[in-house]
Image 1 (cartoon, rainbow, N blue to C red):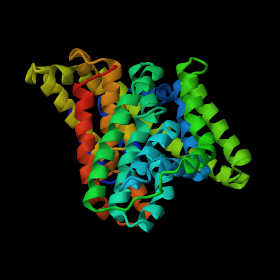
Image 2 (tube, rainbow, N blue to C red; image 1 turned 120 degrees about the vertical axis):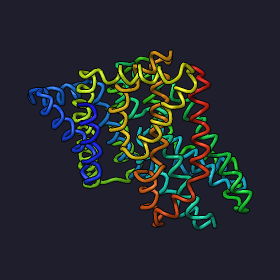
Image 3 (tube, one colour; image 1 turned 180 degrees about the horizontal axis):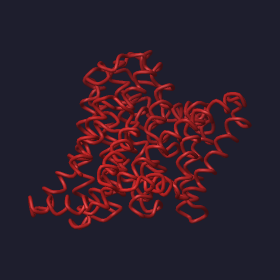
Length: 415
């Protein structure tokens, strides 16, 4: 029946059905053929989304959308430019740092790419930067959006693995910063190779002015993450605080958003959340089915029989995660792979938090790896460039992200 389920999954994917429908239809068909009563489907769908931790998902999506549409993201970019714009190719550094700043607010790779891209792409073009390389760098920086906390995929993983969201958030900083440093190194090398111009001259008065202008945006991660790690509120409560803070700043402090625009953003965030929740619900049925058939344990035993070398097994797991990220949307891949690979990771001696970081970073890299590559599509939209040009330009950044991924997996620091 596991082979039947896998065959149906591939067949429905080839037919072009949405991933959530593919997961649900393949699982229901396999359950029906196995003689299992289908009443279990709605029960497991409800059980999969009946978690208080998942309240954070729609809230962080909404907070990220509000901040991306308003002045917050633009002022963060201006502050980063005042610090590093004087370096040759400095706007490339600004692109990465802006992505890291926004990652600490939004929890979404696509939102980070959209916010930074809308603010920086026109300026990068005006300063003579290669448009495709600039757009691909912003897309690659967007992957940090789901690694540096808050992170929607980390919340989903924590629910599945029954792990602490706080522990995952705490261990997301070092991998996120390492990814940012890797991208900056490649960006600076390309800046010198292509003789990119210097940006804003270093000026303490400009730094002070842009810092004050961006201070409300800079306070957002301090409030959100400070509240979580100090124990003042849970990640779910922090997400609600983030929404209220974003609305307060956009409507009453910066005054760059109308109530009509806020309503439209809420509708869009609701649609995004509905898609994510439907994927989680459908994938929960699949996870329950695989567990009932003992598939994860069988996979673990089979993998352990192939090799006793822990490093080789970890490398195989990483390749599987990268391939899944190439073809599947992040939430879908996360919910499918976690129950299947977590038992194997446990038998290899990997901690739950370390494995969570590995799977989230691996799937984040999939956001800039075609054919799915949601960040590349967002960058294409904001830059007006065809996806083919951006895909070719992203290869150097993709290579350094994979290198950092290997370091994160094989050199655990604080997991």
